[in-house]
Structure formats: C-alpha cells, structure tokens
Length: 415
Image (cartoon, rainbow, N blue to C red; front, top):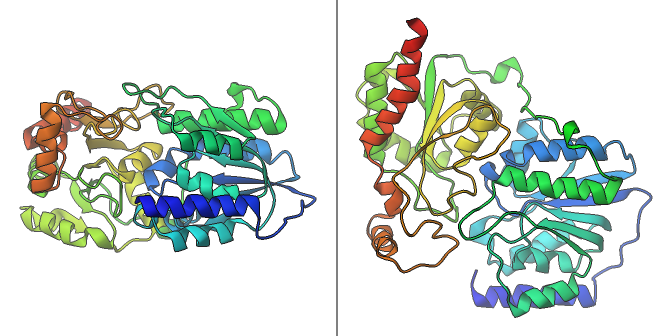
C-alpha cells in the first residue's frame, strides 16, 4: 500500500472517529462483528473449526447476532459449503489489489457501519487498514491476535490511544517461530468466549467437517488425483508457482506407474497454465480438465474424493487437509511455519511438504536480510518470477515423495 493511500485512510478513520457520520443506537439484540481481512481460501478453511465452535457456544446466548465481514470469494465459499453457521455475511473488498484504493476503503466502511457492535473480533493482527476502518464504527471491545513480528511505531501508540478498549491476544509469533493459523484462531475465539459468555472447557472444542453436499454435486468419476498448478490471483506471494514442466514430469510419472486419472482444477485465471500442462502430459485420455468448469460446491467434492492433491502452497492444500485428503505440496520458505509445515495441529492428515534444505533467508516475508541466498532469490524473482527456494525443488524430489508416500504405500496394501 502506498504512503499516500495509507495517509488518506488514516485521516478518514480519524475523521470518522472524531465526528461519526451517524449515531447508532443499541438494539435489544447484541451484535458481534468478525472480520477476516486476508482474502485467501486457505485462511478461511483453517478458521472453520474455531468459527464453528464459537458459533455453537454463542448460539446458546440468543441475544447475540453474529456478522461476518470478508471478501466475496470467502462469503461464496461459506455459502456453497453450507458453513455460514447462521451468520449474517457482509461482502467487503479486502483483496490485495484493492487494498490501496481509497474509494474501496470508504465503501467497506459504509457496508459495515450499519449498527452498533458490542464486540469486534479479528482473526489477525489489526493492520493499519483495518484499524482505520473500524475507528468510525460504534463498538465496545475489540479482540484480535498479536502482530506476527512485533514492531513499535508512532502509529501504534496513536492507534492504542484511539482504540482504547482492545484485547490483544498474545500468540507465539517471532522471527524464527510462527504460529499456525488454526491455533491462532482457536486462541482468539477462546479468549472472546471468556469475555462474552464466560470460560469454556477446552474439552468441548469439537472437530468440524465441511458438510457432504447433495448428490448432484458429486463427481461421476473415481480413482483420480488432483493437480493444482495455479495460485490465487492477487496474492501477496505471487512467486511461489512451481515450473509447469516439472508439474508435467510428476504427472507423467503418475500416469505411467498407476492407473489413476489426473484432474486439472482451477479458476478462469488458471486456464492458460493448465492448458500448457495438458499439452505436456503424454497420456491425454486419462486427463480430465475441469478448469473453470465447476462450482465451488463441485470443487469441494472433487478435492474430497481425490486419492491425493498435488500442488503449490495455496488454498487447495489447506482445504484438502480439512477434507482429510492426502496432499503433496511444493513448499518454500518465505512464510515458513505460518501454514506449512503443520505442527501440533488437530488434523488427521497433515500435508506432505516437498522442500529443499532451509536457506539462510528463511522467513524472507517477515525478516529483512541481505545474505547471499536472498540476493540470488531476488535475482531469480526478477528474471523468472519464482522464489529460488521453490525453483530449487526438482522433479525428482517430488516424484520420490509421491513414490514413497503413495505408490509404495498402495503396493503394501496388496502384499
């Protein structure tokens, strides 16, 4: 976000705070606003369990209404997977490409500033964008998680003065150890439950499975794996997409050594990429290209019923994990530990990371470094549009992982 946009948003937030556009009266029913600023599918699927348990407990307190503010893609995902938990969904534009748009910022505010909120809950740290957004809302308490790497600026002091009734939930974030998203959500929501309805025993925290959808959404074929070669458009980390020729090497090996079909999935933005992959695959009659041809509901069922999913570090992998599908993921080190590798997570199937050895520039998204590896990576990004830690992963490494952890495992079944 550029400096001019940040300044305009901060000033507008301050104006809303000092002279609210309208006074909102408290209604007989209390309101809770939950904000998910990050727009990725991976972020919401790892929040689902905490969100489900939060709804279960809050639902016992009938005077509360829950509103959930997120980007349209996340709201659509919740609706199509029947995971709205009776919340009122508010579609706001939190996409990265529009984060610096002042007009979008004001539009988001107008959609949210409809009622008084007794609590505002954020899954993540309150960025300057979100802090400015909520300044003009009528609220009682704000609950959110601590910044990943704590930094102290004048603006933090100003925000603390303006947003005085804030509950900051400390999590184990540091420059070398990050905390997994689902653990952060659980901790934030547990704290919220203590504040709102009293403490809850952790033993009541239940698993959540995305509901099985109707028969019409189930795919007609079986015995297949999914290849997810694309990455989300507008993502903060656009350089994590593995080389398409390497994807083809792995696909051709699987087709040669197994009787599996390969299903290509993705959005309209992935069509050209998947077409390239299709053209490089040798046994085309065993490839099913469903790129941009499925609804969200059908997409979920494709992942649920697959033998495994093979792809980049993206929402596909996190969703497949929630659906208990085996996954192989091409993983780098730019945000090592935030999602992958999963550690101390309550899930039955953990993604299988395919990585090189840890470089000195690990966590480059959070820690600034000027070591030799980072200089080489920056050059690789400029020349080829890919992180060096991702590009260094070879086809052979990926094939070996699939052979050892799927093909050889399948052979053991028949011995």
